[in-house]
Length: 284
Ligand SMILES: NC(=O)c1ccc[n+]([C@@H]2O[C@H](COP(=O)([O-])OP(=O)(O)OC[C@H]3O[C@@H](n4cnc5c(N)ncnc54)[C@H](OP(=O)(O)O)[C@@H]3O)[C@@H](O)[C@H]2O)c1
Image (cartoon, rainbow, N blue to C red):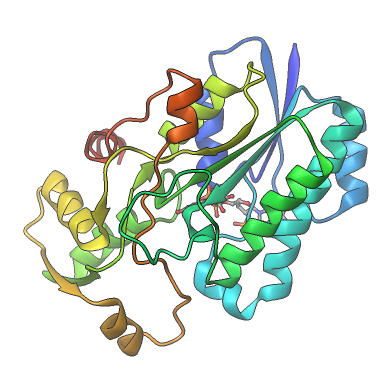
């Protein structure tokens, strides 16, 4: 039996990992969230790793509130950077593989072409900067790591899809940003990619999103179409949205990721975003 420590198990990805690995009997999941394992505490991380002797550590924990990170930088630093460092040190000491999840927000978004893994990073928000440092520390302290950069994730938990559906209950028109482009990614798709890589030695940094691209406004339209709602989506620019709701973190205008490393080194394929959201909507 191979023990796998899952951190942040109550989050969207943590729950998806549990579903994706549920029928794989060779793995035993050791599920942890803040009460069981605060990843910012190196002593607790080391103690659990020594007790469990994990085959892998899958880090699903993070400070994911992008706006809150701007004013909560210390916690963002601890959770998004020091946490992965701690897990990487523990993995090195116990011989475990590490999965670190990162983000398209490590890029500036000032481009109109897809980002490959070799493109230069330039995060513009505290969230993006702390996540990038998390990547760097995982590389600094570990060797058997998989860093997966994903984007616009939805699953079991709080996310854009649920926010849109809740708004549509209150209003027949919603304003959604129409000049930021990316790729909505279902947590189950990412969990399947992790399950695929788990038994391999195919280490490195991977872009890991569904296929295709859209704006948030186009994504909202597709959600309402699938839900059979007549809610009208009114496009709004990022500038206008920021004026209406001050305190927004900077978000990349164009952060479509090319899953180049996966394509070049594996035969794993993500679903197109339209197919993945249709699949997700069936679960609601
Ligand atoms: N969601 C997205 O759109 C998106 C996009 C790109 C990348 N990502 C990355 O994907 C990964 C998974 O995201 P997600 O959406 O599944 O996140 P999520 O739903 O916010 O879940 C994160 C989990 O981590 C827990 N946590 C927070 N601080 C912790 C700590 N110190 N120790 C242990 N657990 C802690 C959270 O608990 P509390 O709820 O109690 O804080 C929560 O249960 C993250 O690395 C994130 O940066 C997400």
